[in-house]
Image 1 (cartoon, helix red, strand yellow):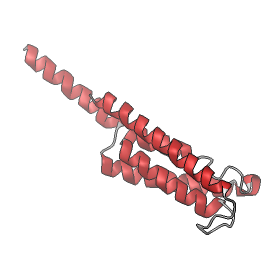
Image 2 (cartoon, rainbow, N blue to C red):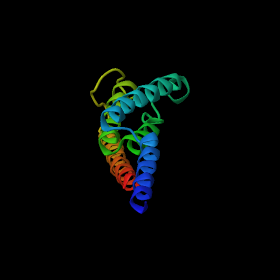
Image 3 (cartoon, rainbow, N blue to C red):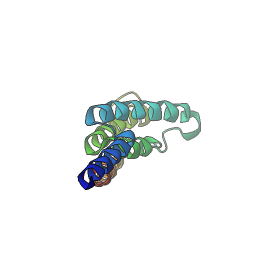
Image 4 (cartoon, rainbow, N blue to C red):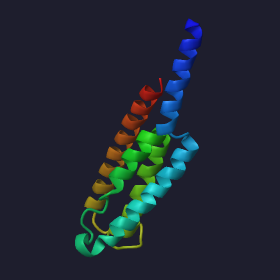
Length: 130
């Protein structure tokens, strides 16, 4: 009876975690979708923000992807966000060229912060699943 209760508790715990955490494949798909949504919202804000804050909103995509999907989806969201932000919101727009050398620092910092969020979110996810 005791072993049956333990199995039931483990099953209930796994069911609870599986409802809030996604398999890596689904996490990557959700990460791509979150980045796309962030890019669309940021594009809608371009008349107000211009080229300032090119990565605004993308951090949220990384946080959600890493929390629900783990490290790999978080890293995917980081790379996609950097590419979208760079291509759409840096001067010259719609190009992956860099006009101002300081932009390399901005991109590098964004990638570093995104990787940190991804690794931290992956650790939180792993701890929650254990």
